[in-house]
Amino acid sequence: MIEARLLASNRSAGREILACGNKEKVMETTAESFKGLDLAIFSSGSKVSLEFADMARKQGCVVIDNSSAFRMDPQVPLVIPEINPQELDNHRGIIANPNCSTAVTLMGLYPLHKRFGLKRLITSTYQAVSGAGAAGANALLNEISTDSSNIQNNQDSPFPYPIAFNLIPHIDDFREDGYTKEEIKMRNESRKILDLPKVHVSCTCVRVPVMRAHSISVNAEFESPVNVPDARNAIESFDGAELYDLPSSGSYPMPLDFAEKEACGVGRLRIDHALPNGLAFWVVGDQLWKGAALNAIQIAESLVERKCMEFIS
Ligand SMILES: NC(=O)c1ccc[n+]([C@@H]2O[C@H](COP(=O)([O-])OP(=O)(O)OC[C@H]3O[C@@H](n4cnc5c(N)ncnc54)[C@H](OP(=O)(O)O)[C@@H]3O)[C@@H](O)[C@H]2O)c1
Image 1 (cartoon, rainbow, N blue to C red):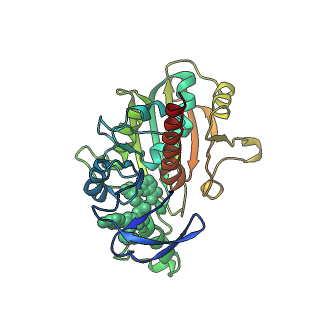
Image 2: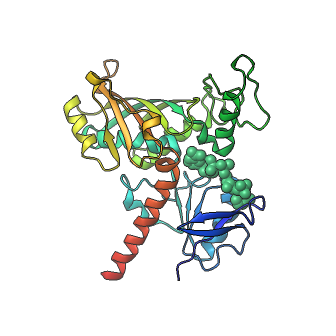
Image 3: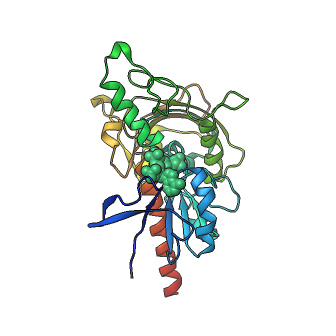
């Protein structure tokens, strides 16, 4: 029998949601929620993942976790199926989904790394408000509907300052070295996914008043000499990335074009004259899809395929 359970906190218990054509009731998550389930996708923040993931795993349910709770755990694979699906063979019941900006960045960077060998990575992110959850999206909607000369930070906003008509170079907490935790996620998770534990990475993360889809400006240094035609070719041949790069006609990827799109868009591809063997590009992707839900579903599909192959052979 195929059964889907929609779980949330007690705030949402009893709500009805249309899922796979059926009206399903949302239930409160408890220790009993995972009994009999093969697979659970967690997307409720690290605290909830730390509370329930191990309980689910011990009941035989494989957990795909969207939070940062387990991403850097050496026992937990951190997977983008187009990049490192082989890691799924080594899971022990929990698989981590990467940080949203990291996932989108690597969808543009990985084909170039395969072709030229990544040596150094510098990124600046332009992160949509929905990256901070439903509360982030609501904050922007509320602020843009008020008088622009009098925008106040609402107490329900997850942002430290007004986001409408503004940019906030601060996502997640600051560390002693001046970087934010979000910026360090880009460094550590890129290293883990690309299996380049020592690659140099520096990142600046910025929240922008865009509803959906993150954009990242990337400057990368490579081991081998680079050229734009080969770089374009590498991106065009990579599943999940779409080259959207016609400078003569002003064509480049933008969040409005890539919201609710499975592929990530890569454009503004050019030689970076400030770095040896350097390339600069711009990548955009729906952080709710490729940065979270879609990647989780692709992991689940890949797990099912692997089980089927095991069964056949
Ligand atoms: N937003 C993104 O772009 C994005 C991208 C990648 C990864 N993530 C990660 O995904 C996770 C969720 O983020 P979000 O943006 O979806 O946040 P969100 O909009 O605030 O949603 C949080 C969800 O967690 C549920 N929840 C809260 N407490 C719970 C509990 N005790 N037990 C079970 N469910 C509980 C909430 O249910 P109620 O409505 O009942 O409270 C809600 O459905 C975070 O770890 C985030 O880092 C988000």
